[in-house]
Image 1 (cartoon, helix red, strand yellow):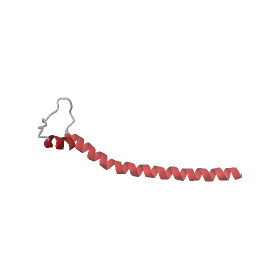
Image 2 (tube, helix red, strand yellow):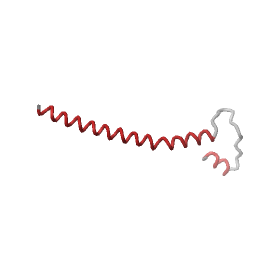
Image 3 (cartoon, helix red, strand yellow):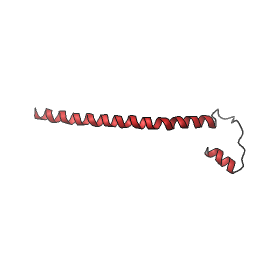
Image 4 (cartoon, helix red, strand yellow):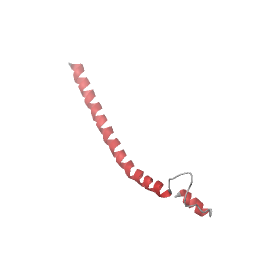
Length: 70
């Protein structure tokens, strides 16, 4: 979008195809939308894993405390 905006702002006509790549602005936009959907899911998964690891650490400390008493 930025490249398109700059080209329009400077009155530069972008050719319809690029002989150096098969990537189109539409492909980039669709992949960016997919990333925007996946990032919150990944953040949620990471928060769940962090909570799980903190719980495991708490249990490990409890076990170590009990083991030291024995």
